[in-house]
Each structure stands twice: as C-alpha cells, then as structure tokens.
Length: 111
View (spheres, helix red, strand yellow):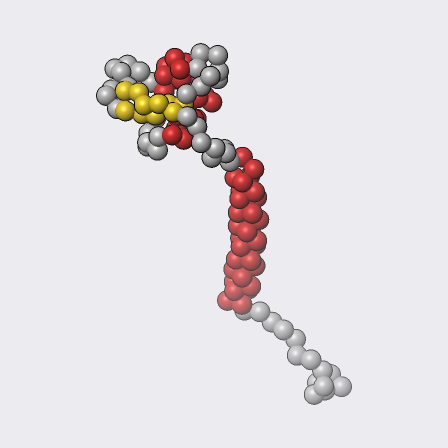
C-alpha cells in the first residue's frame, strides 16, 4: 500500500521555486508597506496643510544684504520670524532660500 494510486505526491521545491516564492513574498510585503506609508503620508499632509485664505500683501524691493529673516523681523517685529517667512514663501513661489538685491517680492500686511 505504500505506492497506492490514491495517495498524494510529495511536493518538492527546487532552488528556483524557493526563489520565486521568496521574491513574491517580498513584493507583497513591499507593496503593503508602500500602501500603508502613502496612506499615512497623505493623512499627515492633509492635517498639516496651511490654509489658503487670502492674505493682504504689498510689494517690496529686496535691498542689498537683506534676507527673508531680516525682512520678516522688519515687517512683523512682535511675531515669530519663521511664521512670517512661511507666509512670504506662500506669496512668492521662488526656489531657493536666498534673495537677490533688486528682486520684487510680496510680503504680508500684518497688523
């Protein structure tokens, strides 16, 4: 009865079969991680976004030696310079963190 036709055959995996199973498992795990990360990243972005409420602004010309920090302190001495700089960046879609003398930028009118 050892070799009866009704008994199931034993499954043996070759090295290639093991590799296919491991790579498949790795793809599933990576996909799950990526989906979870993007869901959390999207939730964090939506909860930390800055409101797009209109802000009153005026145009100023950057003077030699001025920086975002010095401009922020000059237009809003009682406020956090970083908050004012963030508002300036919202009003001006410049790339980079330095200003060129003579550049016209919008700054928020803060009361």
